[in-house]
Length: 353
View 1 (cartoon, helix red, strand yellow):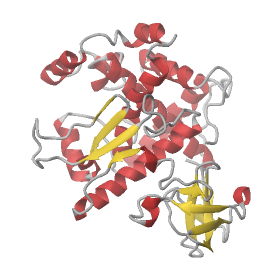
View 2 (view 1 turned 90 degrees about the vertical axis):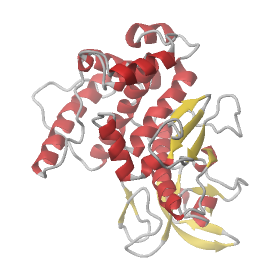
View 3 (view 1 turned 120 degrees about the horizontal axis):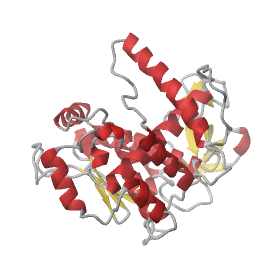
């Protein structure tokens, strides 16, 4: 994530802020410029941007800003859409007459907007189902019809045909930690869920039916293997033996599609965290010669010492490792494949949305 500052008073801002704590200005994120802008009322439900790249341009608030304050994204005034680019991806939201659902939905939307920011920054197409029914993306945020943690009543998080379903209970810290322990996972976050499921969507958009399919199978395996049987084997017997030698996580060993989605999620972990570190001027000195800055090797050369340092800092605070994963040679090859699918040779690893 980039760093943002108030255009009025210079106060440092967070990507999620709705108002400036320094001067009290209303804030809004302008996705076409990738800036958080201070805003002034301009009448008739319009707001004037104070950000230099958009000075005096008029905007409207996303409906989810005005109605539920779960989104701070703005829409150009001339655009007639009711929702912003990120919220137009929603197909189903939770029942907001249930007070507990409002907080869970807010947490989901916070993670979703970060993912959309990342996708735009990486130059990936972000299309919704209204504009592109065949290739667009949609989210269903659903609650369990039965609150008990049991199958088959539980709403399953997953992806099919461009529709990503997320169980809103995953936004409850206690429930998510219980499930992480139940499944013996090293890491489980709302943002991680979004990155993983988005990976399934982009496999269909970027790899399936393309020239990438043959090299994909050489690295990840044949995705034509029965998916349901593979998951049944995984949940019955656990991950493949010696999985850390070949996979980024135990779940990645279940099926090539899950290996891809897990690897994709970790690639987004890397690029997003490194962008944040760069924005704050964080660098870790190493003895190795620096690789070309636009290469995958540069990404790894920055990532490994950064995560070692961050893990060490967490341990100093008595906290679990921030990034409890080992990047084996086969995992690095898979991450490089994701990098090459997303970023053509010579393209910058990170660029503004």
